[in-house]
Image (cartoon, rainbow, N blue to C red; front, side, top):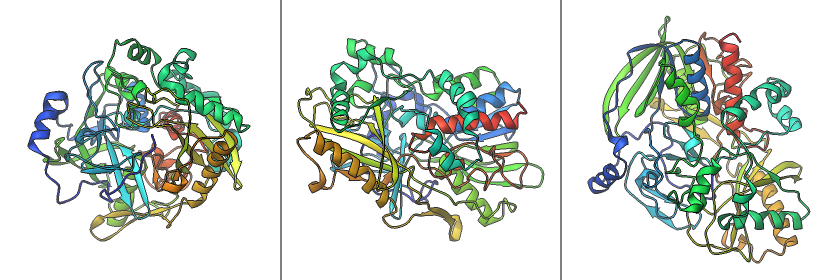
Length: 528
């Protein structure tokens, strides 16, 4: 994600009981701009052989693999199915966002530290505020592939092994599963012509400063389609990725998101169908099959219908927060009585820290979104990665270099269910302080050695660790599940998303590891 701070959201994956009202004028505008998301929503079958909750990296992999194995599969996704168009503004921008950007909320404070207000609507980014931490996650068909910034590096062996502690074999991941996902998502580093173009002057200056401080920037594999960025630069497409847009979606399909690969292949089999606008409220087992309570919701938040669906197989891929909340609620209510005491535990932020420092000599052309490079180091006894990032959505230069820091921070939180099934995340007060201090010390050293013209400490913007764009854990492999995501105590109940990861993907963006673990889980489940 880009550098921003989220404020004020519901502390639950469920929509609030008393909803705000969508503004009719804005709703009419959204209908004229993106009529596709207002089309009537189909109803999923009452019973299905396999039901997948969520359509992000884990859910999309599971859907494709189940469908290819001949298993009829339903995928439920609470968000909308957003189209792409090279010239329409499908998604809103970060600079002056509207309701298309955010999941049923009316305010947001971004990198400029200026609070923004907009119409209540079912946009693509869910910013959920828990005590002491804000969590960013997706609400769209394609999950995080719609709103992330595309960086998909492989974590180093020694750090991976520290995190997974033998539950997952690193050799198997790098020989089979990481390469499989890399091929299917066509991952590759930023080409030189893109890197040398005007919108990536900030990437070149970021690398220059890192080298001046004695670090060696390494290119990062990305999911962006460089041909689309070339179209933007040549005027053949509306500017998006080259104009600092990513957090709230790329209208022209600049990212090779999951709708263009795993989900497309799953649908093409004729045995998988994705149902947007379907939010799962609870899960259980009646002794014979899985029972799922779901409500169909319009983009405006109106509940259109409530139903109970059943399935022989249930795959949880609603993201770390969504999957953890469903399992914690199911354990508390007794609808899944055999869940063990590890449910809800082991949650972490991947050590996310947003960073900023000054720069000079960057042309006033704004900043392109794709990440070009990263550096690895150690600070305060913890491994640290800094990735070159961007200032989202601004058409002119701000003399600011942004970084995303990821720190091997052992701090963990826990989901708990309260009265009435409300689930909250218990995260320590100042729980990411160690990560912030470690990442900030690296950023400060670079600024000092590279003679950066400005630091942002005095206005509190040099480092922020009050958020995470990479929530992980809550149904951890080897604890809630076996080593392949099968939930202890239940046949045919799998976890294949970030909830299965023990709080960190070892100083790497999680998407590649989540997808690779899902491929591994499905190989095991399908007997390959």
